[in-house]
Length: 415
Ligand code: NAD
Image 1 (spheres, rainbow, N blue to C red):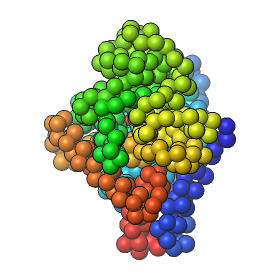
Image 2 (image 1 turned 120 degrees about the vertical axis):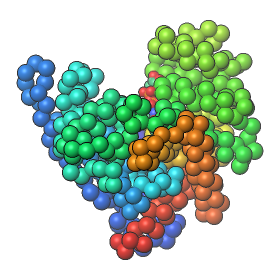
Image 3 (image 1 turned 180 degrees about the horizontal axis):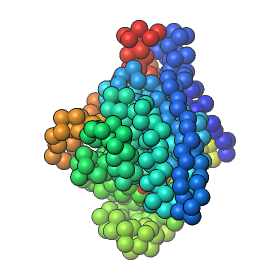
């Protein structure tokens, strides 16, 4: 399978959208690159008494529409280009969801699984000391991402408030509820994806209560299973998979029992009244709706010709390779792209920023209601761009995002 530099992939996507929008050369040049990049070292005293130097990054891709927004990843394979790519995608994602935010991303090259809690806390606090000057409620608002979580955010917020000598919980989102977090965050990504599926089904005349398969049964996959049935009035979940295996039932799997089984046994495998199948075969099942909620590049030129789903909802980041995208488009399969399908997470993070700002917190039902309204509008904008530009959903979503950011840059007089 082809290997990718994800930043080059994002640049090609920006160029394609810019061409459809007939943007001028200066605007294109501006949108092809991060506005600001920070790279730094973070010394951490390890438990064995030695000091280790970690390499960290924070990239603010574009802030024309508002403060940069995006997660911080702790990952051994992080590079400047993976962070540039993710910061770029965050820019188009916040714009597609029509949030008053820009895009950013950060990361530290490290092996979090082999570090103690104390070492992770030192690294998190060191990260904030390195970027404190450049982040803030009106500048850049980080969040958790791969191998960071609400506890990481709590340490980071505390370090930031210690440096600045004032309470500013909105400097980071996805914090624990007790210290400025919001209701509804954990289910937000999956909820947004299910809303996008509902709107796609309406537009395409697909019955959402038909057959569903879910690749990956972590936070996003489990919530998608429950919410698909809850919000769309049913739906037969015929197969799910995780890193250990996949299970299938033609009659449909009980989502609640499956979540309990996964939480108690650590895997979906061995679920009663199901039969084991190969993980790769799940993607090629005869289903109506497929949620990839696990890995990057799960759908590639290797399997795209055999995919039978009518709608693919990309809860994972980048589950479809560029080659596969073209094949799926040619075959008439509707791919709800990640920058729309997983925009529910950042939308509720934005709601958290709003609540932190006025220090008054919403009921969970209000968070759900406002998320639904925001993502329904976003889905309609993308559908409209598909029709106007005669293109597929991924490019249409990029067209919506790039057009909104380009307009903000122009209004500010940047280009
Ligand atoms: P998670 O770690 O909770 O779950 C990932 C799941 O994928 C696990 O069940 C794991 O067992 C499974 N998996 C790993 N390898 C697999 C394989 N080969 N086949 C099948 N399943 C496999 O992560 P998550 O929070 O659910 O996120 C999943 C995806 O959604 C990621 O790409 C993430 O970047 C994206 N995403 C998540 C959020 C969020 O708010 N959680 C927001 C935006 C995007």
